[in-house]
Image (tube, rainbow, N blue to C red):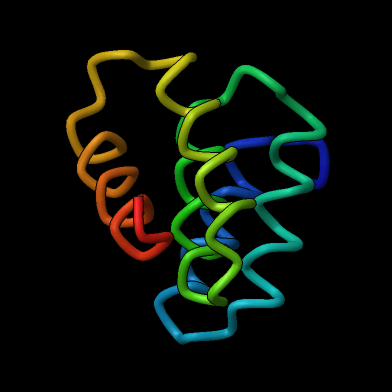
Length: 88
């Protein structure tokens, strides 16, 4: 379903697992456009941006994921790793 944020998120995860980072990022962005409050899509976008070495953008996405889901320990762990990569 092209209007399903969940479907776009799953498409992005599939691409992420195959190391197709640009395609994954595009899918996560579409998912977020369809539902700005979808924490999983923000988290997955943050992971993808981190794998692309775009640490500042990754940090922003992970912070949004944590804003939407403050109990996400995996998002908090990944935020810590990104901060480490940034030397903070």
